[in-house]
Image (cartoon, rainbow, N blue to C red; front, side, top):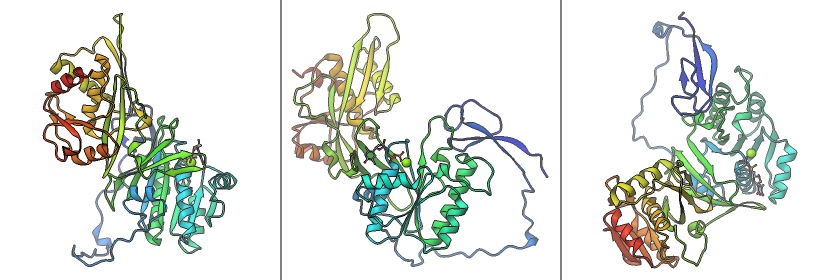
Length: 454
Ligand code: TYD
Ligand code: MG
């Protein structure tokens, strides 16, 4: 038997290191490495004379049953899932604590239960009374959900095996679950993985659609959902700023569909409301032209969403290091854009503080936002408001060229529908006839255009 080695497991992403380090080399989180029980290594070679069963090979084109999807009835949830729940699938629902995961799943469970699907909701975080209280606040107290407060996976599986398998099973959250066959406290990587493995196996065998709730934690005190990403069929992330009303449900991985559709919800007094037409949500609704503000026609899957980007530039007198702060966009991308504006267009941001904010707690991931961000920055720097009826989009290269982006036509069409009159974007974009469209070749053309504003 080989000598057992010490190993350290990152509690955030599950990667293994052979020495302790302050920062995880894989996910770059700090203080997340914890020593794991030593792994015993037996012979790495199978003794084949002991016998094994032959594996059967199958042709790829064997006719099978078409993929069955069961809509939950929460249209925004179904949209993000790619059409509904697939029986026997495992879904991981990640998100910050307090963002609304339990609320969303209770609402989905109630919809399914009311439509006649057997539904089990196991809460390891709240007592049944607390969940009941939330349900009555949501007006769902009459939904025939089977509710349990439990954390032992052995107890949960024993119970599930003694009944008809439910159509929908929620485990809230996987980090509170505990298996007595595995060492360690609930929330450690080995417990989270082991519990998830058993629950997922139950889902596959029984045809139950399983949702595992996973809190995203920054401090690494409990294992993050990333350690489960490869085990489940679908990874969803529920995002938003807690101080804002809007929540976005996004699929980050989906073995049964596309990952670019989003579901949009608003957190209200009676739970999450579905937002069927989100295109106007992230505009601040101003009439007065304001320097530093640009509207960006973003695209989420097939759905256009108009988003306001706000920039503020503060000139510093002293030689202090200027701050750059970003909410809702990538700070690395902002640094790149500032560098391109400085080196290709001769603008000077070096002695100024730069603040960038995306309105409404929205997080931009669309690369076409570059032009809108640049327009907001130049407008703030020059103190020249952009026309309130204009939208800006396009990707910017390091050379300062404005690059074409996907679905320009869809973006301009939605902007025109919502009453915008001017579109500024890449030079030969398709479908630009809906708006008074101005094409940009270089970032310098954008600067000229902003400077020419009254
Ligand atoms: P919750 O679903 O418990 O979040 P998670 O499971 O992701 O931790 O939601 C918590 C927040 O949602 C809570 O701070 C209050 C708010 N909320 C409302 O605003 N309205 C409601 O109807 C409900 C049920 C919650
Ligand atoms: Mg919760």
